Image 1 (spheres, rainbow, N blue to C red):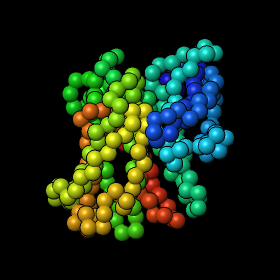
Image 2 (tube, rainbow, N blue to C red):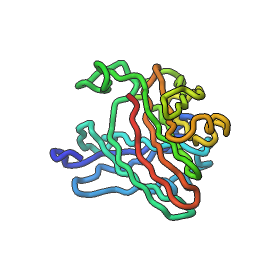
Image 3 (cartoon, one colour):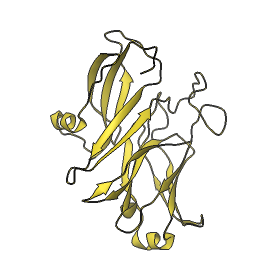
Length: 228
């Protein structure tokens, strides 16, 4: 938390890929210099039915039921562990205002023009050989926005030439978990060749997400990505 803050009032929301809220947990008004771990695997196991889509995400929001203060710049530290290998990867992310026509102190940032930033342009690196690429795209919204995204996944070769395109529709408040090896077929991946990449493009909304390289049964790397 910021150096001026004395506490952090938080709730966590477990959200299915469809955008359905599965559960909500109050984490308390956390005093400065204390931390509050959250085991998401254990949390899902305690719910009735888990995640119907087979995947989802967690949102952290301010919750002032017991008082507290906030500066609008909440950050979280996440640790992920591959169940069968024990390999661990970590990433950090910060709060943001998403998909609203309102502007407050130049938020949501646009990075390429004046706020609010309401589009997505993400360059996704791809693995080679036995290493696959995973991507989890999240469509968050601070106020109600379009019911679904109009997201294009555009495969390019190393020369920047388009090879293939897929269009996906992510529910507002929901997410999409996908793998390069499943989204594009063998012929398309062979045509793209080495050093290929995917451009994630959406002119209707801003997406957030996570990406990584996966060597099933051995290891993986993981980080967050931000659409602009």
